[in-house]
Length: 352
Image (spheres, one colour):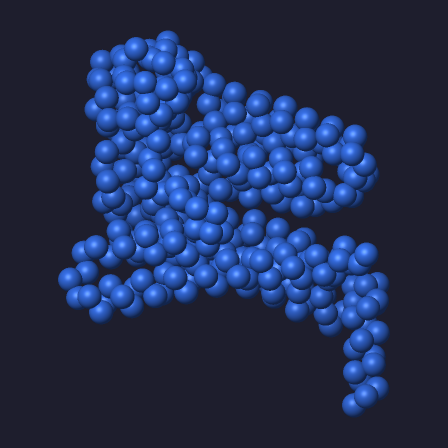
Protein backbone atom coordinates (compact mmCIF):
# COMPACT_ATOMS: atom_id res chain seq x y z
CA UNK A 1 0.00 0.00 0.00
CA UNK A 2 2.81 2.39 0.87
CA UNK A 3 4.47 1.67 -2.46
CA UNK A 4 1.26 2.55 -4.30
CA UNK A 5 0.98 5.83 -2.42
CA UNK A 6 4.61 6.71 -3.17
CA UNK A 7 4.11 5.95 -6.86
CA UNK A 8 0.99 8.15 -6.93
CA UNK A 9 2.88 10.97 -5.24
CA UNK A 10 5.66 10.68 -7.80
CA UNK A 11 3.16 10.84 -10.63
CA UNK A 12 1.38 13.80 -9.00
CA UNK A 13 4.60 15.81 -8.78
CA UNK A 14 5.83 14.98 -12.26
CA UNK A 15 3.75 16.79 -14.91
CA UNK A 16 5.41 14.94 -17.77
CA UNK A 17 4.53 11.60 -16.22
CA UNK A 18 0.93 12.71 -15.73
CA UNK A 19 0.51 13.93 -19.27
CA UNK A 20 2.05 10.78 -20.71
CA UNK A 21 -0.15 8.33 -18.84
CA UNK A 22 -2.71 6.89 -21.31
CA UNK A 23 -5.21 6.01 -18.57
CA UNK A 24 -5.43 9.63 -17.34
CA UNK A 25 -5.67 11.44 -20.67
CA UNK A 26 -9.19 10.29 -21.57
CA UNK A 27 -10.42 11.23 -18.09
CA UNK A 28 -9.06 14.76 -18.48
CA UNK A 29 -11.16 15.30 -21.61
CA UNK A 30 -14.41 14.19 -19.97
CA UNK A 31 -14.98 17.39 -17.88
CA UNK A 32 -14.33 19.56 -20.94
CA UNK A 33 -16.79 17.56 -23.04
CA UNK A 34 -19.31 17.62 -20.21
CA UNK A 35 -19.03 21.41 -19.94
CA UNK A 36 -20.07 21.69 -23.59
CA UNK A 37 -22.74 19.04 -23.13
CA UNK A 38 -24.34 21.09 -20.36
CA UNK A 39 -24.92 24.06 -22.70
CA UNK A 40 -28.24 22.70 -24.12
CA UNK A 41 -29.43 22.28 -20.52
CA UNK A 42 -29.47 26.08 -20.28
CA UNK A 43 -31.73 26.13 -23.33
CA UNK A 44 -34.12 23.75 -21.59
CA UNK A 45 -34.04 25.92 -18.46
CA UNK A 46 -34.94 28.89 -20.64
CA UNK A 47 -37.95 26.99 -22.00
CA UNK A 48 -38.91 25.97 -18.48
CA UNK A 49 -38.89 29.63 -17.43
CA UNK A 50 -41.36 30.35 -20.21
CA UNK A 51 -42.05 33.66 -21.82
CA UNK A 52 -40.35 36.71 -20.32
CA UNK A 53 -43.03 38.77 -18.60
CA UNK A 54 -40.70 41.01 -16.62
CA UNK A 55 -41.04 44.79 -16.41
CA UNK A 56 -37.87 45.40 -18.44
CA UNK A 57 -39.06 43.30 -21.37
CA UNK A 58 -42.51 44.85 -21.41
CA UNK A 59 -41.08 48.32 -21.05
CA UNK A 60 -38.14 48.54 -23.42
CA UNK A 61 -36.35 45.30 -24.43
CA UNK A 62 -38.93 44.75 -27.17
CA UNK A 63 -39.77 48.35 -27.95
CA UNK A 64 -36.21 49.67 -28.36
CA UNK A 65 -35.15 47.40 -31.27
CA UNK A 66 -38.60 47.92 -32.80
CA UNK A 67 -38.11 51.70 -32.69
CA UNK A 68 -34.62 51.42 -34.14
CA UNK A 69 -35.59 49.16 -37.04
CA UNK A 70 -38.86 50.94 -37.91
CA UNK A 71 -37.54 54.49 -37.84
CA UNK A 72 -39.46 55.74 -34.80
CA UNK A 73 -36.48 57.25 -32.95
CA UNK A 74 -37.36 60.73 -34.23
CA UNK A 75 -41.09 60.24 -33.75
CA UNK A 76 -41.70 58.68 -30.30
CA UNK A 77 -40.69 60.53 -27.15
CA UNK A 78 -39.63 58.60 -24.03
CA UNK A 79 -42.08 55.76 -24.62
CA UNK A 80 -40.09 53.52 -22.27
CA UNK A 81 -39.20 56.37 -19.89
CA UNK A 82 -35.44 56.67 -19.28
CA UNK A 83 -34.86 53.17 -20.73
CA UNK A 84 -35.92 54.47 -24.13
CA UNK A 85 -32.38 55.78 -24.50
CA UNK A 86 -30.49 52.55 -23.77
CA UNK A 87 -28.41 51.10 -26.60
CA UNK A 88 -30.87 48.92 -28.56
CA UNK A 89 -28.24 46.83 -30.36
CA UNK A 90 -28.14 43.97 -27.77
CA UNK A 91 -31.88 43.43 -28.26
CA UNK A 92 -31.85 43.46 -32.07
CA UNK A 93 -30.81 39.79 -32.65
CA UNK A 94 -33.62 38.37 -30.49
CA UNK A 95 -36.17 40.81 -31.96
CA UNK A 96 -35.24 39.89 -35.54
CA UNK A 97 -35.09 36.16 -34.80
CA UNK A 98 -38.53 36.26 -33.17
CA UNK A 99 -40.01 37.69 -36.39
CA UNK A 100 -38.95 34.69 -38.46
CA UNK A 101 -38.46 31.70 -36.12
CA UNK A 102 -40.73 29.79 -33.70
CA UNK A 103 -40.75 31.30 -30.19
CA UNK A 104 -39.65 28.03 -28.57
CA UNK A 105 -36.60 27.87 -30.82
CA UNK A 106 -35.60 31.46 -30.04
CA UNK A 107 -35.99 30.84 -26.32
CA UNK A 108 -33.93 27.67 -26.51
CA UNK A 109 -31.21 29.39 -28.56
CA UNK A 110 -30.97 32.31 -26.13
CA UNK A 111 -30.61 29.87 -23.23
CA UNK A 112 -27.84 28.00 -25.06
CA UNK A 113 -26.00 31.26 -25.67
CA UNK A 114 -26.22 32.00 -21.96
CA UNK A 115 -24.93 28.49 -21.27
CA UNK A 116 -21.62 29.37 -22.92
CA UNK A 117 -20.82 31.22 -19.69
CA UNK A 118 -20.27 27.82 -18.08
CA UNK A 119 -17.72 26.83 -20.72
CA UNK A 120 -15.81 30.07 -20.26
CA UNK A 121 -15.89 29.77 -16.47
CA UNK A 122 -14.62 26.20 -16.76
CA UNK A 123 -11.66 27.29 -18.86
CA UNK A 124 -10.92 30.22 -16.53
CA UNK A 125 -11.06 27.98 -13.46
CA UNK A 126 -8.82 25.41 -15.15
CA UNK A 127 -6.15 28.03 -15.71
CA UNK A 128 -6.62 29.76 -12.36
CA UNK A 129 -6.12 26.62 -10.26
CA UNK A 130 -3.39 25.27 -12.52
CA UNK A 131 -5.35 22.15 -13.46
CA UNK A 132 -2.94 19.37 -14.43
CA UNK A 133 -4.77 16.23 -13.33
CA UNK A 134 -8.19 14.72 -13.78
CA UNK A 135 -9.18 15.76 -10.26
CA UNK A 136 -8.29 19.39 -11.02
CA UNK A 137 -10.36 19.23 -14.19
CA UNK A 138 -13.39 18.02 -12.27
CA UNK A 139 -12.84 20.71 -9.66
CA UNK A 140 -12.78 23.33 -12.43
CA UNK A 141 -16.06 22.00 -13.79
CA UNK A 142 -17.61 22.08 -10.31
CA UNK A 143 -16.58 25.71 -9.86
CA UNK A 144 -18.07 26.58 -13.26
CA UNK A 145 -21.36 24.89 -12.37
CA UNK A 146 -21.51 26.76 -9.07
CA UNK A 147 -20.74 30.02 -10.84
CA UNK A 148 -23.66 29.58 -13.25
CA UNK A 149 -26.22 28.29 -10.77
CA UNK A 150 -26.24 31.07 -8.18
CA UNK A 151 -29.15 33.09 -6.88
CA UNK A 152 -29.08 35.45 -9.87
CA UNK A 153 -27.66 33.36 -12.72
CA UNK A 154 -30.47 30.79 -12.87
CA UNK A 155 -33.08 33.56 -12.91
CA UNK A 156 -31.38 35.32 -15.84
CA UNK A 157 -31.11 32.27 -18.13
CA UNK A 158 -33.18 33.06 -21.22
CA UNK A 159 -34.03 36.46 -19.78
CA UNK A 160 -34.09 39.55 -22.00
CA UNK A 161 -31.87 41.61 -19.66
CA UNK A 162 -28.77 40.72 -21.75
CA UNK A 163 -26.65 40.38 -18.61
CA UNK A 164 -25.82 36.74 -19.35
CA UNK A 165 -24.96 37.74 -22.92
CA UNK A 166 -22.67 40.61 -21.99
CA UNK A 167 -20.81 38.44 -19.48
CA UNK A 168 -19.64 36.29 -22.38
CA UNK A 169 -17.47 39.19 -23.57
CA UNK A 170 -16.27 39.96 -20.04
CA UNK A 171 -15.36 36.33 -19.32
CA UNK A 172 -13.64 36.01 -22.70
CA UNK A 173 -11.52 39.04 -21.79
CA UNK A 174 -10.75 37.53 -18.39
CA UNK A 175 -9.74 34.23 -19.99
CA UNK A 176 -7.27 36.04 -22.23
CA UNK A 177 -5.80 37.80 -19.20
CA UNK A 178 -5.44 34.79 -16.89
CA UNK A 179 -3.62 32.96 -19.67
CA UNK A 180 -1.17 35.84 -19.98
CA UNK A 181 0.53 35.63 -16.57
CA UNK A 182 4.27 36.01 -17.10
CA UNK A 183 6.82 38.50 -18.32
CA UNK A 184 6.99 37.30 -21.94
CA UNK A 185 3.45 37.45 -23.24
CA UNK A 186 2.27 38.79 -26.58
CA UNK A 187 0.70 42.25 -26.29
CA UNK A 188 -2.12 41.33 -28.63
CA UNK A 189 -3.71 39.32 -25.84
CA UNK A 190 -4.24 42.44 -23.76
CA UNK A 191 -5.53 44.40 -26.73
CA UNK A 192 -7.98 41.61 -27.54
CA UNK A 193 -9.07 41.39 -23.90
CA UNK A 194 -9.67 45.14 -23.81
CA UNK A 195 -11.61 45.00 -27.06
CA UNK A 196 -13.87 42.20 -25.77
CA UNK A 197 -14.57 44.01 -22.52
CA UNK A 198 -15.05 47.29 -24.40
CA UNK A 199 -17.71 45.59 -26.54
CA UNK A 200 -19.64 44.73 -23.39
CA UNK A 201 -19.34 48.28 -22.06
CA UNK A 202 -20.39 49.81 -25.37
CA UNK A 203 -23.44 47.59 -25.57
CA UNK A 204 -24.43 47.91 -21.90
CA UNK A 205 -22.94 50.60 -19.66
CA UNK A 206 -23.46 48.57 -16.49
CA UNK A 207 -20.51 46.40 -17.59
CA UNK A 208 -18.11 49.31 -16.96
CA UNK A 209 -17.07 48.18 -13.42
CA UNK A 210 -15.75 44.95 -14.90
CA UNK A 211 -13.48 46.98 -17.18
CA UNK A 212 -11.97 48.70 -14.14
CA UNK A 213 -11.43 45.35 -12.42
CA UNK A 214 -9.85 43.91 -15.56
CA UNK A 215 -7.37 46.79 -15.72
CA UNK A 216 -6.41 46.26 -12.07
CA UNK A 217 -5.98 42.54 -12.73
CA UNK A 218 -3.72 43.16 -15.72
CA UNK A 219 -1.56 45.52 -13.69
CA UNK A 220 -1.23 42.85 -10.99
CA UNK A 221 0.21 40.24 -13.37
CA UNK A 222 3.83 39.27 -12.87
CA UNK A 223 6.08 41.52 -14.99
CA UNK A 224 8.43 44.51 -14.67
CA UNK A 225 6.69 47.79 -13.85
CA UNK A 226 7.19 49.28 -17.32
CA UNK A 227 5.73 46.17 -18.94
CA UNK A 228 2.71 46.35 -16.64
CA UNK A 229 1.96 49.95 -17.62
CA UNK A 230 2.39 49.07 -21.29
CA UNK A 231 -0.06 46.21 -20.92
CA UNK A 232 -2.64 48.42 -19.23
CA UNK A 233 -2.23 50.99 -22.01
CA UNK A 234 -2.78 48.35 -24.71
CA UNK A 235 -5.76 47.02 -22.75
CA UNK A 236 -7.21 50.54 -22.56
CA UNK A 237 -6.75 51.18 -26.27
CA UNK A 238 -8.49 47.91 -27.07
CA UNK A 239 -11.30 48.80 -24.68
CA UNK A 240 -11.80 52.22 -26.25
CA UNK A 241 -11.91 50.63 -29.70
CA UNK A 242 -14.48 48.04 -28.63
CA UNK A 243 -16.67 50.55 -26.82
CA UNK A 244 -16.50 53.02 -29.72
CA UNK A 245 -17.34 50.38 -32.32
CA UNK A 246 -20.35 48.93 -30.48
CA UNK A 247 -21.54 51.96 -28.54
CA UNK A 248 -20.14 54.99 -30.33
CA UNK A 249 -22.85 55.25 -32.98
CA UNK A 250 -25.62 55.18 -30.36
CA UNK A 251 -23.78 57.68 -28.16
CA UNK A 252 -23.50 60.01 -31.15
CA UNK A 253 -27.22 59.61 -31.82
CA UNK A 254 -28.03 60.56 -28.24
CA UNK A 255 -25.65 63.50 -28.41
CA UNK A 256 -27.43 64.83 -31.48
CA UNK A 257 -30.93 64.30 -30.06
CA UNK A 258 -30.44 65.22 -26.41
CA UNK A 259 -27.02 66.84 -25.97
CA UNK A 260 -25.90 63.99 -23.66
CA UNK A 261 -24.20 60.84 -25.08
CA UNK A 262 -25.19 58.90 -21.94
CA UNK A 263 -28.69 60.35 -21.66
CA UNK A 264 -30.27 60.52 -19.13
CA UNK A 265 -27.36 59.52 -16.90
CA UNK A 266 -24.63 61.90 -15.68
CA UNK A 267 -26.82 64.84 -16.57
CA UNK A 268 -25.65 66.61 -13.42
CA UNK A 269 -22.25 66.77 -15.16
CA UNK A 270 -23.12 67.01 -18.86
CA UNK A 271 -26.24 69.13 -18.52
CA UNK A 272 -28.74 68.26 -21.24
CA UNK A 273 -31.48 70.95 -21.31
CA UNK A 274 -34.20 68.32 -21.79
CA UNK A 275 -34.21 67.02 -18.20
CA UNK A 276 -33.18 68.02 -14.68
CA UNK A 277 -29.53 68.29 -13.68
CA UNK A 278 -29.38 64.94 -11.85
CA UNK A 279 -27.41 61.72 -12.15
CA UNK A 280 -30.53 59.52 -12.44
CA UNK A 281 -28.64 56.79 -10.63
CA UNK A 282 -30.63 53.95 -9.06
CA UNK A 283 -29.62 53.92 -5.39
CA UNK A 284 -31.55 50.78 -4.46
CA UNK A 285 -28.76 48.37 -5.38
CA UNK A 286 -25.70 50.30 -4.20
CA UNK A 287 -23.78 49.11 -1.08
CA UNK A 288 -24.12 51.57 1.77
CA UNK A 289 -21.00 50.53 3.69
CA UNK A 290 -17.69 48.69 3.24
CA UNK A 291 -19.03 45.65 5.08
CA UNK A 292 -22.11 45.49 2.87
CA UNK A 293 -19.90 45.76 -0.20
CA UNK A 294 -17.85 42.75 0.97
CA UNK A 295 -20.90 40.57 1.59
CA UNK A 296 -22.99 41.98 -1.26
CA UNK A 297 -23.43 38.62 -3.06
CA UNK A 298 -25.50 37.50 -0.06
CA UNK A 299 -27.34 40.82 0.26
CA UNK A 300 -28.17 41.14 -3.42
CA UNK A 301 -29.28 37.53 -3.70
CA UNK A 302 -31.69 37.91 -0.80
CA UNK A 303 -32.88 41.26 -2.18
CA UNK A 304 -33.59 39.81 -5.62
CA UNK A 305 -35.23 36.75 -4.10
CA UNK A 306 -37.60 39.08 -2.28
CA UNK A 307 -38.68 40.59 -5.59
CA UNK A 308 -38.95 37.22 -7.30
CA UNK A 309 -40.94 35.64 -4.48
CA UNK A 310 -43.22 38.62 -3.85
CA UNK A 311 -46.08 36.60 -5.32
CA UNK A 312 -45.70 33.92 -2.64
CA UNK A 313 -48.64 34.21 -0.27
CA UNK A 314 -47.33 31.53 2.07
CA UNK A 315 -44.68 33.12 4.32
CA UNK A 316 -42.96 29.78 4.97
CA UNK A 317 -42.57 29.13 1.23
CA UNK A 318 -41.06 32.57 0.75
CA UNK A 319 -38.63 31.93 3.62
CA UNK A 320 -37.52 28.61 2.16
CA UNK A 321 -36.93 30.22 -1.24
CA UNK A 322 -34.88 32.99 0.37
CA UNK A 323 -32.70 30.44 2.16
CA UNK A 324 -32.07 28.62 -1.12
CA UNK A 325 -30.97 31.86 -2.80
CA UNK A 326 -28.67 32.70 0.10
CA UNK A 327 -27.17 29.20 0.01
CA UNK A 328 -26.48 29.32 -3.74
CA UNK A 329 -24.91 32.77 -3.70
CA UNK A 330 -22.93 32.02 -0.53
CA UNK A 331 -21.58 28.75 -1.92
CA UNK A 332 -20.49 30.44 -5.13
CA UNK A 333 -18.86 33.32 -3.23
CA UNK A 334 -16.91 31.00 -0.93
CA UNK A 335 -15.92 28.57 -3.71
CA UNK A 336 -14.52 31.34 -5.89
CA UNK A 337 -12.38 32.65 -3.05
CA UNK A 338 -11.27 29.13 -2.10
CA UNK A 339 -10.09 28.59 -5.67
CA UNK A 340 -8.18 31.87 -5.63
CA UNK A 341 -6.56 30.99 -2.30
CA UNK A 342 -5.54 27.59 -3.63
CA UNK A 343 -3.92 29.20 -6.67
CA UNK A 344 -2.09 31.69 -4.43
CA UNK A 345 -0.88 28.94 -2.10
CA UNK A 346 0.39 26.72 -4.91
CA UNK A 347 2.20 29.65 -6.53
CA UNK A 348 4.42 30.03 -3.46
CA UNK A 349 3.81 33.78 -3.35
CA UNK A 350 3.20 33.55 0.40
CA UNK A 351 6.86 32.77 1.02
CA UNK A 352 8.88 35.68 2.41
